[in-house]
Amino acid sequence: MRRIVRAAALSSDDVVVEVGPGLGSLTLGLLPNVRRVVAVEVDPVLASALPETARGRVEGELEVVHADALRVTSLPARRRPRWSRTCRTNVAVP
Image 1 (cartoon, rainbow, N blue to C red):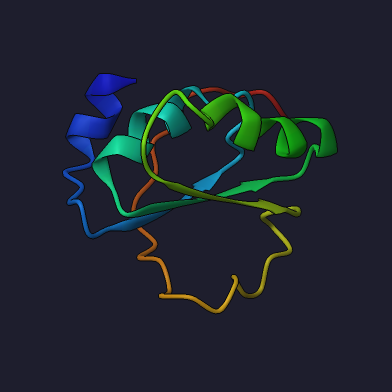
Image 2 (image 1 turned 90 degrees about the vertical axis):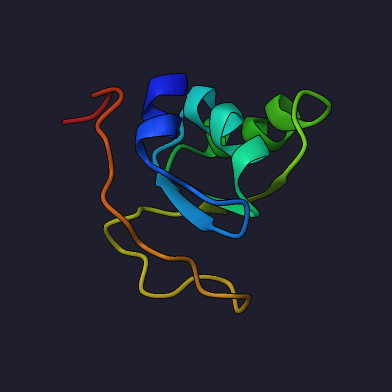
């Protein structure tokens, strides 16, 4: 996870969109390194558990969007995130 975060060459001003954060392993690595993580998770159980997973473990702003990332047409009206190349960390869905 640390290698992925390093390879992404993120800055403390970046806003990252993480698709399918699952249990939040990558999320926890991203949060201390960027301004904000917008995590798009389709599973309602994982989406509701993610804020609690991150709370108290790392500093950083986390926003969880409970939605199917393939159907998301807009994100909350804050500074728009920079969509960047993604790394496949886990293949959990077909």
